[in-house]
Image (cartoon, rainbow, N blue to C red; front, side, top):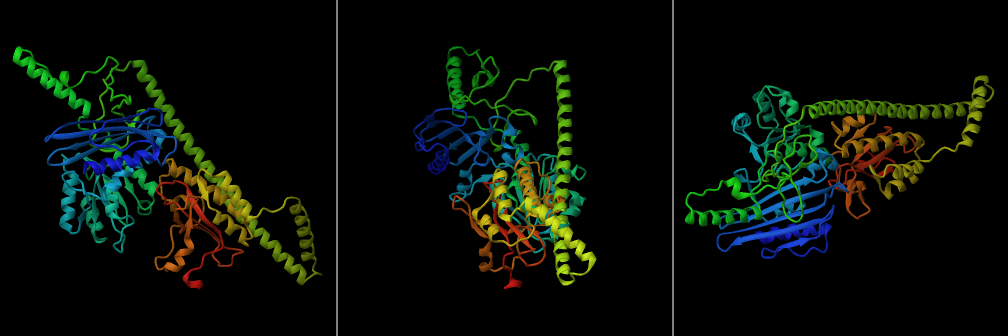
Length: 568
């Protein structure tokens, strides 16, 4: 098992360091250290007794370019078990990895591949979702939630009314590894039992939602202190990452890591020294604090030539651990704070709160501006249609004075419009692809469909794409506190989270596109403009927000309504 783990870890290391050699159980390794790279692999063993390997490596978090993280992995092998411990640390602070979002995405990929070769034990049993299938099981779950000795979060996943789940329970159990133990309600009726048990529907979860009950929960707790993921947020990988990060950080700050290779060497040397001194001078004794480690005068312990200093973070500290619960952060001496520094801290907190208020006000002003633009574009479209009707009436009744005046006004308007050529749909889409490249990935297929579309109101699409980019950025940065449906609704945009489940496999092929890297993506979410199937007055923006490794909205089609069962 150790060899398989080392191979899986080595493959992930070589994604960012292709020249890194294979990790083996009998050969230490060290790679050059830089801001975004570096590796040290150390081993210790005693034949027939134990083997331990410790790997510290730094690389960029795959989901967030430019965000260096350091991973510390300890593998322990004994005759009875193999234990894997891991912690991920944001080198430049939690904010650099988009706070909770980056924390939720910090689980290394090699852990997911372990699933193919082994079923690990965690929290006293095999890693799997625990099924709650009877009212008696709900009572047992409540007893666990209220237990004063519980020191880990418990997550509960509820089904939809038809008994299905928005995310596979076993997949979620692996995502929660090191964060929370997962319990799954087997039937929708049990959500009512859970609500009755916790005493408040605001503290329950139902209709596909997931909730994490942190230690210290009671029926009188504040529901906001126990993170809830609403139904349509569960299937969104980035909103789910934010939830996972919030839960994981709670446990990571309280976690313990087993001693590494260097610490164990020091323990053995100290034990040998103590044994030797005891034989020559029985009265001499050393405390464990003296023998296990010596802290330099600067107060920090070193982890080796990689020179990574791990701190036990405060909630608003500069550094943050965003990984597993088995690792212990090295301790930093507590220094009394001067009264002046306390005052500075209070002022800093006030400034921080004011900045948050200013940001919320700015967001609200921007939202109102965009709503105004969307409504103005709709009004302009109505006015253009009225002018067309007036033209038709003028042709039918050329002698009518009112229509004649309308025709003259229309001619003047057309003359004015001729100086400013109306923009086409494909131009709107191309401009958005360039302006919002950080938030929207507009595929060539979307540009081609826009070029073929006879849609008559391309100006209506411009603020829609701007709003999509804005929502994508807020979600990427962990600032979107609601579902995509609610976020788009706030802008007055008709967002639809998917297509009918009864859609045939043949019709679903319309929604399949290829990203520039050749990876297929299913764009079934869509923005609806118009309720008719006439492509002149109806437009659909088909996209996907559910790609785990890309926070952008991937737009595959922007044009006419796809074929559905009722139109074929």
